[in-house]
Image 1 (cartoon, rainbow, N blue to C red):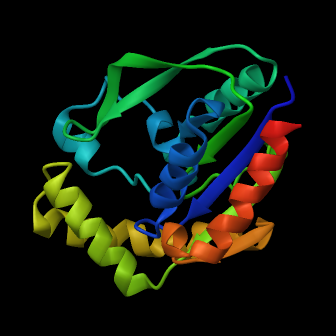
Image 2 (image 1 turned 180 degrees about the horizontal axis):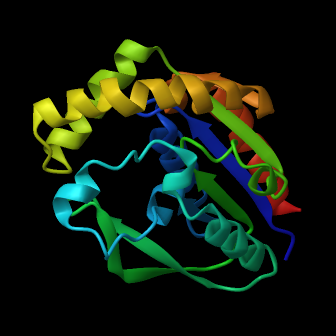
Length: 204
């Protein structure tokens, strides 16, 4: 099977997941998704309070080497056991999720273009670019409503790690993109272009 790997990167709250979901909805079982966030390193040796203080927006927070190995396996037509992450305890969960090789595999995450070996596995690299004020509002809404975080903790994390790491790592990685999409899944023109490219690959 000829497998296409699409990387979708961008800052927190930029609309990466919306863009990914639009493609998933359009092509269903022909698309599998691997999220970089699931590859946060496990810290079973640390107490909860110490885990809360870690910088989760630095490249070192991720087990990217494992993700690279998994993407290679998928590209070879092998299923993987993808790790999962529990944001309420700031640690990797015990459960894994089986990801099957499909005609199109999407890799999504804020820092996936920062790793050259991971980039080299991608056929198309898309960077979702959205204004910072929109991104922080989306981040607050998501972390408070979906991840059980307090407003103060989200704002503090944004100012101390998210914003500085975005400026140091995420924004510069944009130069590695093949396509820059403004407003993510809400950009109908860009979405249609990618859909046509994916459709051609699936049908050939």
